[in-house]
Every structure is written in structure tokens, then in C-alpha cells.
Amino acid sequence: MEAVFSYIIGLGAAVMMPVIFTILGVCIGIKFSKALKSGLYVGVGFVGLSVITALLTSSLGPALAKVVEIYGLELQVFDMGWPAAASVAYNTLVGSFIIPVCLGVNLVLLLLGCTRTVNIDLWNYWHFAFIGAVIYFMTDSIAWGFFAAIICYIITLVLADITAKRFQQFYPGMEGISIPQPFCQGFMPFAVVINKALDYVPGINKINIDSEGMKKKFGLFGEPLFLGVIIGIAIGCLACKDWDEIVNNIPATLGLGIKMGAVMELIPRITSLFIEGLKPISEATRELIAKKFGENKELYIGMSPALVIGHPTTLVVSLLLIPVTLALAVMLPGNQFLPLASLAGMFYVFVMVLPYTNGNVLRSFIVGLVVVSIGLIFVTMMSGDFTSAAHSVAVAHPEDASVKVPEGFQAGALDFASSPLSMLIYSCMKWLKYIGAGILVILTMALVVWNKIQINKK
Image 1 (cartoon, rainbow, N blue to C red):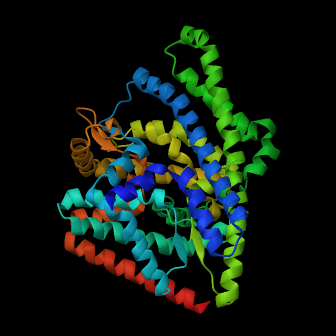
Image 2 (cartoon, helix red, strand yellow; image 1 turned 45 degrees about the horizontal axis):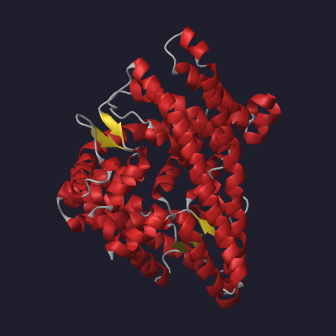
Image 3 (cartoon, rainbow, N blue to C red; image 1 turned 30 degrees about the vertical axis):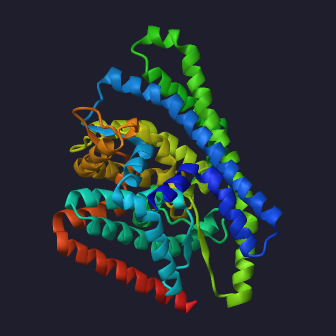
């Protein structure tokens, strides 16, 4: 079973999405050719997104590493990045069985009428494996590891249901889609609370500038493309020791600016492919459910947040937060985590924030500032047990260099270790043990029952 699911995960979303969408499309009555075309669009979208993400990482990584070296910013928790964190998660006993176990839980909840979401975002199942693996190595119990993973999965499904309508209304073309990814959903309660609190702050409660408003107010300076170029050049300048080095590195600095601008411009164009691919599937799904079960019955296809990271507000706020996060990492008391490899994943922080701030740039930035500050501390707190998991996987798989933790450092990653949902489960299990497990069970059951009541009302 481990070999089968490792093979599926190894193929990647770009290969498997056309297969899954073709099968799903044919099952719900779409012509084979149309279903295949939908799947290919989604697959191509994932390819394009991985290429752009690689461009961002390869361009920004060396410059940020130089900044760290020049200003002596090294801290004790090494940023493994999400690919290494996913590798650690999947290469544990919990990770080996996480896909069939979670799909089984999803099926049971669907049959009981406790969720509307069918989570086909298999590549992000590593989040559930991650918290399960950390708890497994912390408690030395596979049972507690699966307990943590399943609790995280169930809470995420309920949150996906709760936020689905808001998500669909804010992002055009996302009808019938929900986001069952715990990293994104973990920040949603913060967005709700902080956004409401800002309504009572004089001055800020009057500012309502979204991405289109920025373009109107600031012209060229409000364009994500131009902001990408400017911030790329600024980071390139910071990576130089003195003025002479800045002058000598003008071509490289300007090149970094253009590449950052390219990322900001190309991501929205690529993510539009997801919408084109999803539209026939979501429409056919709604029609089939309405025909078989009535207009009030709804089913959501749980997809990756990658579908919507091209929103202009997400791009602008994420880009502005990159240098701010580096400064926070150094200045924040108690923090030992310096994010570098994880910064490319900053876009995913805002997927479920924007529907509650209505795309307001200032409010989204404030929410991002709060959750990133808290997230840095969370990563630091979890680093010891994450390091134990990483060391164990490194011994079992010496050929995988990505999971090796440098000597003298502990392991960390912004995604998924910085998520409040991850920290809630980790804290309950580490410091409260059986009482914490009881709290998690009560909380999860309460959410499931409440969600079933809401579904039955409709």
C-alpha cells in the first residue's frame, strides 16, 4: 500500500489531475473528450505554477541567503521548506497510510451527512501526515499519530464546508469548490476576528482599498507587476555589502526585479487555467446533484488553494510581507526560526483570509502580520519534535538529502508547522496529553454535529 500511494504522490498533481478529472467527468455524464480537456487544463495549470514557483525560489533564494550572511541573521531553527516537510511526513508510518485512512474518514462523514466536501486534493494530505508524524515521534505511539491526523482532517473538512460559500462568492469561477487544506483554514478564524476588530479602529475602518483601488489611487505604483520589480530590486540591493557592490551588480539586481515582476504577472494568468478546467466539472456536478437529490442538496469538490493564489491582493500582500517576515524573525522575542525556503509559500497564507477582508489590502496585510508573527513562534515551539521526525526519516532514507538537518540546527517549516490548527493539536497532545485528547475529541464532535445540523437545515 505504501508503494502504491508513494507512486501516486510521486506522479504529482500535473499527471494525476487529468486522470482524476477524466474519470470524475465521465462518471458524472460529461463526454470523454470534454472531461479529458478539463483535466489537462488543470494539469497544465499545476505545471505552470510549479515552473513559476521554481523561478521565484531560484531567483529569491540566493539573494536572501546573501542578506542573511551580510547581516548575520542566522538563527537556530533551519528552514527545511515545505517539500522537505512533506517528504518527512510521507516517509513515516503515519504518512504511508494517510491517504486511504483519510479518504475512508471522508466517505464515512459524507454517508452520515456530516460534510459536503469530497477532498480530492491528495497532494496536500501531507499536512495531516505531518501533524500525525510529529505526534507519533513525540508520544512514540502510532495510535496517537493517527488520532492527531484524523482530528486535523475532520476539523479541516468542517471548516471547508463552513467557508465554502464565502470562498465561492469572493473568487469568481469557483462555484462548487471548497478548500480542505488545513494550512489555509487555520488562519481563517484570525481573519474573521481581526477584520471585525479593525471595524472599531478609527482611521483604518475608513480605508477600503483593494487591488483595483490601488491601481486607481497609485497608478503604475499600484500594479502587482511594478511592485514585484521594485521589491525585487530592493532585495537585490540589500544583498550587496556596499555601494560599489551595488554598482557592480546592477545587471543581476535588475534581473531579480524583472523575475519578481514576471512572477507577479504570470501567476494570475496561469491560475486562470484552473478555472477553465474546473468549470465544466463543477457545472456538471451541480446539475447531477440537483437532478438526483434536489436543488437544496450540495456537494463541494475539495481542491488545492493553488487555484486562487493569483488574486492581485494575495500577490501584493505576500510580496510586501517577505522582507517584513525576515525582520520579524530577527526581532521577535523567543523566535529561533528564520524562514528562507518557506517564503515562496507565503501566497497560501491569504487564500482564506481575503474572503473575510473582502480583498482589502491594508486589512489583509495586518492579518498577515499577526499570523506570521504567531506562526514563527509556533515553528520554534514545534522544532524539537519535528527534528526528531526528520532525523528518523533521514536515517531510513539516506538517499534523500532534503530531509537532512544541518549539524547544530533544529528543523522547521512555515507550512504546516506555523498553522494555528497544527499548533492547537500539538499543544493539546504535548502539554495536556489525555485531557488534551479529550478536549480535541469534544471540539471535533461539536463541530461535526453543528455542521450536520446546518446541512440538514438546508
